[in-house]
Length: 57
Image 1 (cartoon, rainbow, N blue to C red):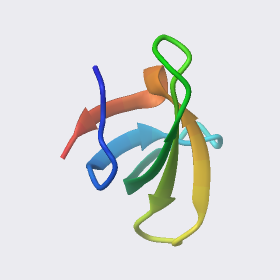
Image 2 (image 1 turned 90 degrees about the horizontal axis):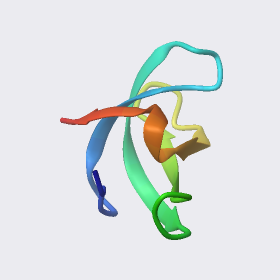
Image 3 (image 1 turned 180 degrees about the vertical axis):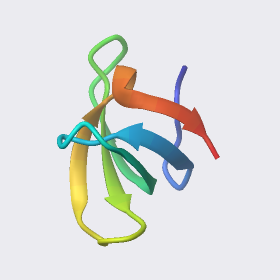
């Protein structure tokens, strides 16, 4: 599934916990697409592989 800049998503962070955030940047092409997501609670940005994104909110 492709996600777009500005989408709110639920994803598995590097700490293996569920997080919610907003897609800020998209890099690469499928199946190697990586997303920069800004966490809603911490405001930190994290690089997330597409398979770690659970769903669009």
